Image (cartoon, rainbow over all chains, first blue to last red; front, side, top):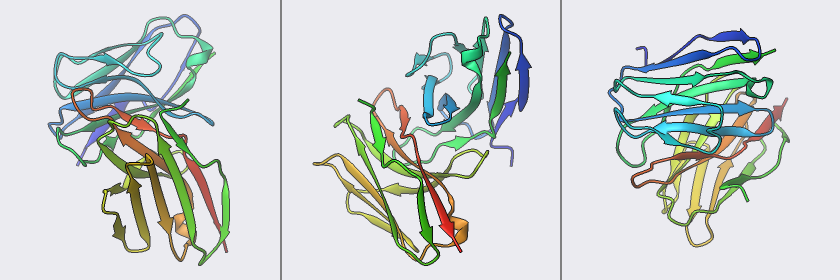
Length: 113
Length: 111
């Protein structure tokens, strides 16, 4: 019962380095989301996808890029990491119907020094 | 203005108490509504969906008022295990289907 799997779980980056966070879901869900969670800010939507090959900007997209080449995978890229991107990143997926829950991965704790 | 706003926390209540959380949303076209629970350093998990007619699940009751753009969650007979952050979530629906989260309200149930 994998559900939504995020890799890596933890990462420390130096300012200016790049990295990709991988989200994989095995539930054949149409929608996938990337959020970041910071103290006192709640979960803020970075980018999302409504289907394979599509992506759209959320509330805080600057400094991030995404790709959804395969339905089951949603990648979040940081091209040049900044300390302001230190956060916990959550990926989620949901099927295409109303009143359905979104399933979350366990999160990635990223520190940029 | 935030799209989804919640009561500021934390709420500190004794076991057995009844506690209510409130949430307002700004997008009148929002389609569906949820309460999620998040334990410390864990991912959010669905607590319950919120329907226009109101719905109950054991000790938990959720209500939606579309006219006032207001969502509520009532927890009766609080247990220590209810201690968590409660997140109000709104789905914009339609082509975008964005899930927008409130900042959450921390509940601490005291013995």
